[in-house]
Image 1 (cartoon, rainbow, N blue to C red):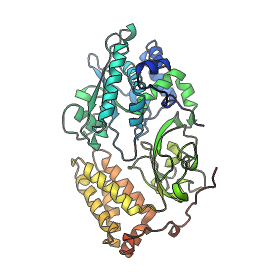
Image 2: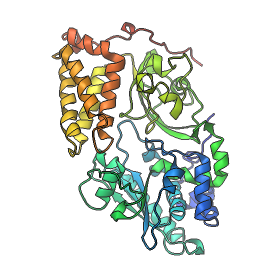
Image 3: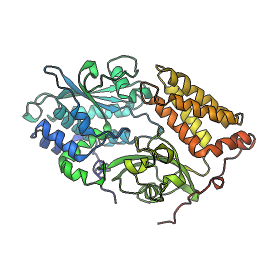
Image 4: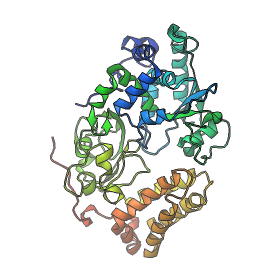
Length: 451
């Protein structure tokens, strides 16, 4: 049974509201933090080993330590709630059901960073969650936990919620800051980094919802105890959004010591694949991370089990590994078409490119058109090689990571499933009525015996 830190009270009736959250120990971490110094809080976050939960996995405490502190210049904390990665919905769950956990985490983090005005930049489609957050903010203010002179400590802090306009690109931190300033959401060139010149050219920390919420249990149990959960540099718990061909889609909190196989087939988590189908592939960290076939997903090339943590999923690099990413865990069974799935993702990235960089603006729709052509049975073998060449020239050649996010799924699909692409080319009529069967792959791994 996984230890729960963030979702332990998720099913408590009324936990969305201040009174119930408070009775369950809510805001005790804030009270504790306000008796500490900013340096002591930062040290706890560093000791915890908390890594950014938005995708990059960068150490949170280290990121905070980069924040410039020029005299007389305001600093800001901005929470990135622009959760738009296909297959990822964990932050939505936190904000919808336990909004005060995020607010408490923001207050502790703001106190540590010296931010008196902090923001939640939320995905435009999350209209009902905006209302939930606004209500929770007003509850906290009414109880003296937000606003001027919080709990008589002299610390002032206001939190504002800003809705985006539905642009995936605004999940990139500098595009988010541009949008928050009222401009078009185009990513900025770096340096300068937000820690030096961020919102309104002031020092700014941008962190994901889950990252900031995790600060609450870190202060409650101490960074040292938090670091004991998990393994290696994958400390603490991680929220996973599980979807696709599984019996129990949903949001799960894991401690990163379980295997991928256990996560997929255990009744505690995904509950296996419906109708006794076999596992074909999985995207374990959101649509932008490389897809892995079953034989590499459940075991590494050395035959060791693949674990649900940053290091194990990345083992072998992109040739045989993938990434934890944003935790959007998408399972594909034996009936799924890899070419069609890759085409769908390419269409998304082509639509969401801001158009600022030529490789992304021109390359993403080009990849989509070629994939559509192959999927319809109208492609050639040269098209597959062209796809590979295009993605290679997009990756690493754009201002922000959206180019990489568009290139990696295409590269991984061709790398691991080239035979399926070629089958679509060589069997145009069959490709419209049936899929390239799992039996055609070397070393497919069957579902394990029932627990």
